Amino acid sequence: MAKNDTIHVRVNEDVKNNAEETLTMLGMTLSEAINMFLCQVSLTGGLPFDVRLPMPKEVIVRSRSELSQKLGEAEADIQDGKVSSEEDVFGRVRVKYGL
Image (cartoon, rainbow, N blue to C red; front, side, top):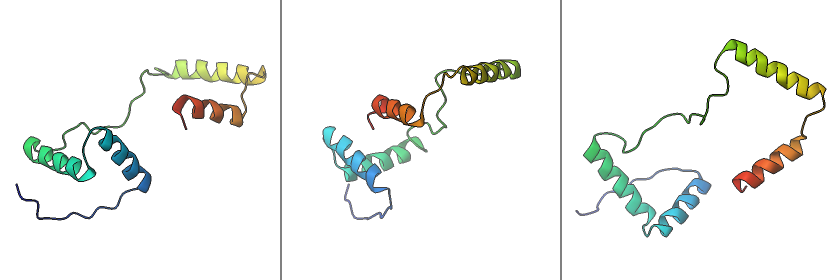
């Protein structure tokens, strides 16, 4: 199939760079991946993947009474001094997610 059309798309530079790195590891270019995506849209009649909001792995609170209980526990933890500094929390997040 001849490639004779051009698409111009504006994307976040970091997103593009990260995608290019990943695609290089897979042995393809960004252009090849976009062509593959568009072919799949045509073949499937829609997006070739589910589009949905990310859901937590577990439901944290199931009812108002459970919410009230959790808030009470949190308040007791604060009163008992069981708190972490912003710096500590963000430090743990950075380590956990390699940021």
